[in-house]
Length: 218
Image: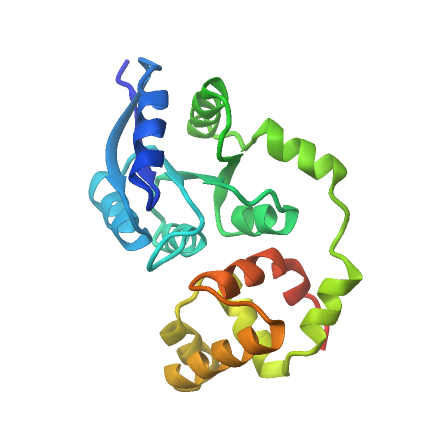
C-alpha cells in the first residue's frame, strides 16, 4: 500500500521541518510538497492532488481559510487539516464551514498529528484533544465583543465579514460593488476604531468574531 501523500503549508520553515519529521516517522505517510504561503499551497494542490493538506491559518497572501474556500469551489480532492495557535471556537467553526476536516493546535503530540491525517484521509473529522478541551470550557462570545462590533458601520461589518470568509480586498470590492481602495480605507478605519494594529490583526479579529458577524447584529 502506498503511503498517504501529504502537503504542508506554513510560512515558518522551522515549523514545516518539525512537522515533516513528525509525519514521516509514520511509514504510511509521506510529505510530497511544502508551501510557505496560501497561493503556493493552492497551486501545489491543483498540480499534485495530495490526499491531505495541513494548513496554517495565518499565512501571507491567501490565508488558510481562503485556500480551503478555493479548494471547495474548485472541487479539489485534497482534504484539509488546519493547524494553528488559535484555540478559538468561532475560528474552528469557521474553518470547518469552509471545508476543513480537521483542527489541531500547534504543539500537538506526534501521535495526534499522524492520527488526524489517517482519520481525515479515511473521511472522518478530527478535532485535536487540546482544542476539544477548549470547547468544553469556552463560553460563547462575550458582551464586550458584541459592543466592539456595534461601533462599526454597516458597510464596515460587511467588509469585516468577508475578511473573515477569506476574501482579498479586490474580491471584497467586487462583492460589494466598491473600489478595492475603498475597501482598504475601511480596513484602516476599522483598525483605528477597534484599536488594533499589525499586518494580520484585523484578519485575526474578523476570524475570532466570524459567528457574530454572520448574525443580524445591525
